[in-house]
Length: 139
Image (tube, rainbow, N blue to C red):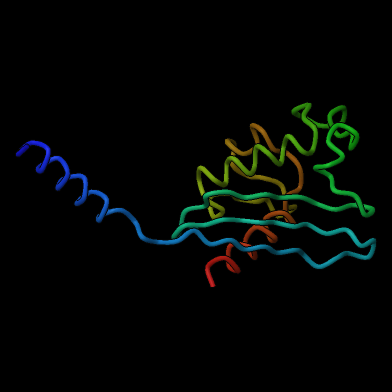
């Protein structure tokens, strides 16, 4: 009985020490360009950690993610990956490392070798939407 009491007390103390911070969600879209194209992001953060992120771009009124292989980037990609697969890689990278770890060249392409391993597209608008969504979530 004494062991059970000590075990329950320890469990209670560990539970009490857990983070009480709530996960918060934010969304953002970049301004539409002359053609009406824009980037969007939805992010869930808990403290400074990104728990999940969804990025997309809309071109000619169509979601690039929904287009998938029909976007037809794979044959033109340096790493032979479709747009949606490159963005999925970027999303996973952001969840693991955070938004601030993604560095861009002056032209808007990933600078980090670990990002370039799976994402070589221009991500200027995606990263702006991600940062704006993160700021909205932290309000």
